[in-house]
Structures are given as structure tokens and as C-alpha cells.
Length: 115
Image 1 (cartoon, rainbow, N blue to C red):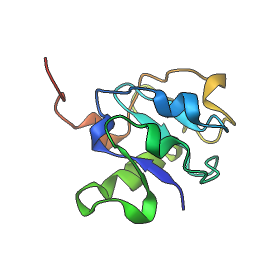
Image 2: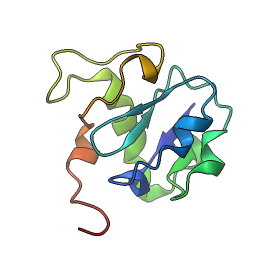
Image 3: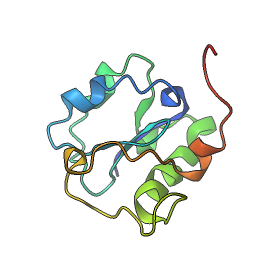
């Protein structure tokens, strides 16, 4: 099990969770942040600092956001537009920086918030 970042993060990306994560497992996409399911140590440090309450333990995801668990994994496991290979497990988000791409569910979302 792991923590998952859901819909409230789309187009917000506050990054307080990134600062709090002791293992650097929160990666930046184009419109959302993603927690690497294999690098996360399930410490929970990210969850209480999220100002938009977008982070959930996988078993506690509200029903409406359950698809974000798969989307979160797809960010690392699938070849996404703008990439020529899956991201895989690079061993820390700081090594690669912002990726500029998103998993399919996040990419398909209309713009969130004020325009």
C-alpha cells in the first residue's frame, strides 16, 4: 500500500508535501504531483501538510477518487506522451525534477480553479 494524490491537487501543486517527504518520493508532473508507490515508506508525513486535502492512504481513498490510485501508478509504469520510456523508479524526485507530463486521468481533467 501507498499514499495517493487525488483530484484536489490538479492544477494546484502546493508542494508542501514535497518539502515534508523524508524519502523524496513525490514527483512533479505537468498539472499534479505523484507519489511513487515503490519508493513511499508509508510514513504519512505528507498527508497532514497538504492544504487541499488531496493525499490519502490508498485504502482510505474516497470512492470518487479511487481511479487516482491507478493513475498514480501509471505515471511511473506507462509510457506517457512526451516520454520515450516509463519513468520507472529513479530513486528520488530531485534527481529528475519536474517532468511536465501527466498520467491519463489527470491529463484528461479540465482546468481546475480560477482561470
